[in-house]
Length: 114
Figure 1 (spheres, rainbow, N blue to C red):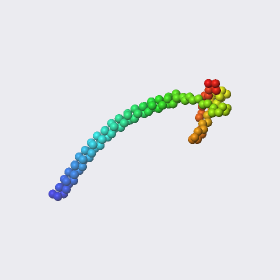
Figure 2: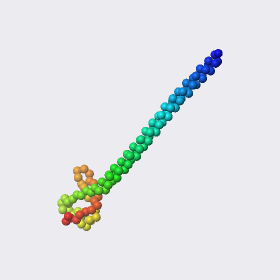
Figure 3: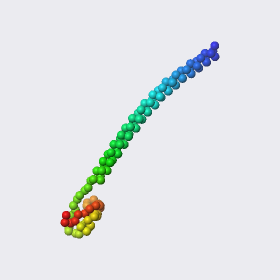
Figure 4: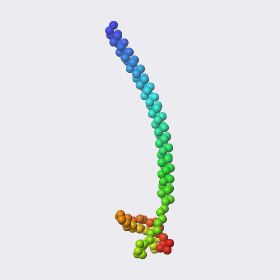
């Protein structure tokens, strides 16, 4: 009678829960497959972007290494300059202007006759 109906209702409830869990498991498995595929695609894209970054960084380093600035500085009033033929290997120029003074390092100095 009554006990049998209760057990049958509990059994049906357990069957319904099992079916819901199977559906949830199938959805979770499908989501896992989708996420795994997305992860693989993103990893491959990341590798490509890292390679592009390395290529651009190498290009930038090459450009930085190849840029040279040439300027000619003439003494303002005929005062002796510390940069002359006696110091052909380089030196420092002190620039004084309306802002604040600063020094510029030089790799090579040409003689005054240049």
